[in-house]
Length: 364
Ligand code: NDP
Image 1 (cartoon, rainbow, N blue to C red):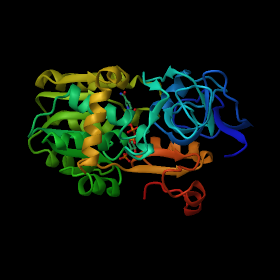
Image 2: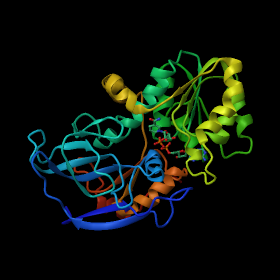
Image 3: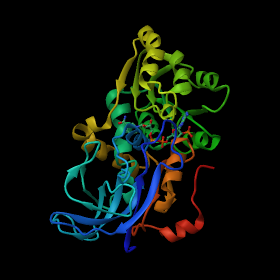
């Protein structure tokens, strides 16, 4: 444990575009003491997610605030009888080495802190495949789109945190699953490791043709994470009564001309949707926490234990790497669910120091 708290704060409301130098400021202070009903925690894993950029750009996060982020933490001291030193919890320390927790609800409606049993699964999965990302995939793909055996499902950002889960759920439900990803290593991973039937690269000039060839029976379900060119390649392939989960549009998060990405997305798709009676489901995972979290955890834990679902994490070492890794994650430079190891994870190796010595691993 360091004797000081280290953190990244928002240095300015970021201009349009992607993150850049000057958006974040490194600050150090004393480790806080827990008040009545609170516990002091040290952050072990910090989750980096695309939605965090939206919060910063929209002003939801104020200049000077510690940057928001969900975390897996260890309790160091407690004045809350629910938590004992040594407990692992899911909470929202944000981009900092330590944090205080009381009782509350995070921005997606999750109750926190929530205890994590390291005997159930690696503790990092509480902010990955068994956390909000897994539930996002489950509620969009399974609950909203009701996949039927034999249907063709296309998943964009297929090797990322949400995409890898969505595609594997579709595969388990008996669908033909086609991923869309960037570099060849990501495409190979989703086919060879995750069991997708095919994966095409959106980086190829032939992307739209490649997707058409990979979907000879058209597309019944599209799990949308990306928007833009990837989306446009899917539209002409939509089958009658197809369904779309509009989960996210990451290719549009860095646009600089102020375009309303959601409006453009709907206007571009309107004629296609009408022609084939496509149902479009907007998705906010917070709407499914109360109704589907318990069912999801039971299903997904079972699938992981049975070897039916695999997951990949891209773990960067040290809080100091966070802005760089955050930018990389937004633009395809990480591979799998993006996490930062902030302090040692006592349940596994390597240690933070060993991890740092190896160098951080970004996508090949
Ligand atoms: P990922 O781990 O998938 O990381 C983002 C990926 O997006 C990158 O790795 C990259 O993959 C891909 N990408 C980035 N830019 C482009 C581009 N221009 N064209 C095509 N692909 C691009 O992130 P998450 O799994 O955390 O999030 C996936 C999506 O889910 C996001 O849109 C996010 O906003 C959304 N989301 C929505 C929620 C909801 O409640 N609706 C909740 C949580 C997430 P590659 O290298 O393969 O191109």
